[in-house]
Length: 200
Image (cartoon, rainbow, N blue to C red; front, side, top):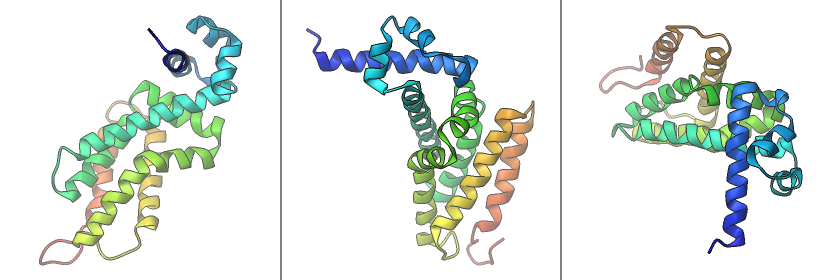
């Protein structure tokens, strides 16, 4: 027998799933709450009960997309044992995630405009940003990066990658992802301390 809690969870998940598909295809502004309610087969009251508003539902969708991007970054990093390789792979995975239509429209185009820059940045820091800070801390501690405060470096790199991902989402064409990935490697490489030699 399905409990009320399970029913509530299933209803909320259905709203997020249907809203995500609509937001990704048409954009936040073009999708009225009635369209989402109709797609789910529930009432407006159910939508507002679970999320408070269309904006609240959009926030839940963005959080889901952010978690998925964070998981992609972590999975790419975990393919490597060397922390430097983990950094590079994770950064490349973050930028490449912008090629996904859901990520492009929901996380990179609509979310900063709809939620505001401050909230969007806070959500980014809680997912991919946290992973970036962790690996940078490890690299400083092991001597692969020069001793330095991690937070300023993390914010600089995060800003560069977010800007690149936004550019790819809005204007990028064929071959641009490869060009961005190559530029990212050129940006990261001089930060590395080479054993027996100066920083390059």
